[in-house]
Structure formats: C-alpha cells, structure tokens
Image: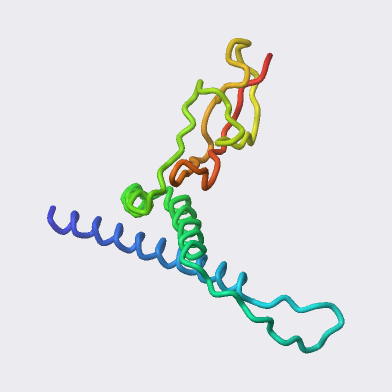
Length: 151
C-alpha cells in the first residue's frame, strides 16, 4: 500500500514538472517574441532599435498567462491543477466562474456558442466551457460560456 501511495505521488510530481516545463517554455517564447526586432521589407540587415526594459508588470502578465495555460493543460491531473490554482491565488488571480443561470455579462464572459432554451432564461449562461480569471477586479481572461437563446 505504501508503495502504491508513493507511486501515485511520484506520477503527480512528474505531471507537475511537465506542466511547469511547458509553462516555462510558453513564457520564454512569449518574452522572446516580444523582445525580437521585426525585420522590415527589402532590408537584408536591420540594426536593433533600443529596447525599453521589461517591467515587472509585463513579467507578471506573461507569467500569469503561462500559469493559466498550465492550468488548462493540466485538466487530467486534479493535483497539478490545484497546485497551479494555488500559485495563481497567491498572485491575486482568482477564477471567474460563470454559473449556469447567471446573466450573460459581455465584460466578464465570452459567448462561444448558443443553445435554444426556455424563454425565461434567454440571455443567461447555459454552461461554462472554460473558466475565466480576474486580478484585482479586472478580467484577465473572460469565462467562455454557452448562452441560452429564445426557442
């Protein structure tokens, strides 16, 4: 029994390492793409323009995007998702749940589909497809939802 518990913990740790590696790669790719100079047409050699230093806010934004992506990728591992969500909460990023039956809010929700439903529920959330995220009351990523329409 002890070996089975240890093996389960090992697989969860391996899953967490994979998610962290993917998130790190995503963050590095985004940072490098933002910092890379864009060549202009017709020029073989382009001198690099002076780059503004990357601010702490920009780093936090990129890290937040990477962690939210890692949360989405870790759908099959509840332990990894819980850990990533805990890290996001420490950074002040909280899930934006769109409960079924709540009114559709275009500032906080992104309608990805519609379904015909009862006339008294028109314009309400039928179900959430992907959770949204907020930080300090501002929407970081809107919740993706399916919205009821009139039959």
